[in-house]
Length: 118
Image 1 (cartoon, rainbow, N blue to C red):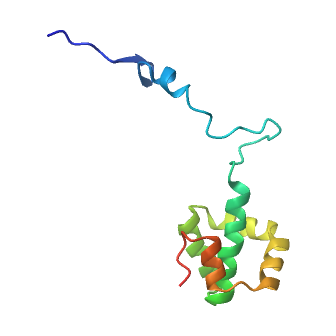
Image 2: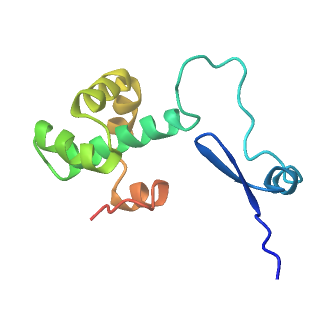
Image 3: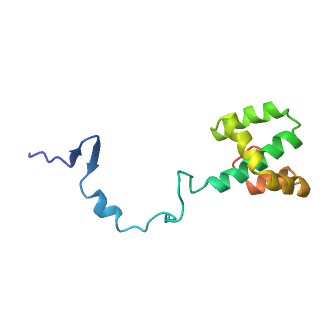
């Protein structure tokens, strides 16, 4: 029985024959914005807003110390403490709005159901 090799090798890459042909029939998952410059993620603004809400929860509702809040958020967001503090500083207007609206745990759970708000 003959053996047919279904892959071909490109230096540092292995591709399955026909993969590009098959995947080209599907629409693109998301369009890149040509106006964007730099390495910012497509979801960076949503992540940053989530950081603000999570900081509000940890610092205001759970009454964690600032450094404990940041340390716990490092584990949740896989970001350095310095980056989280920088984001919180950038998001002060949003954070003031969050404090003014004072969402409870139920509202936070509805907004970001993938987090534990207990």
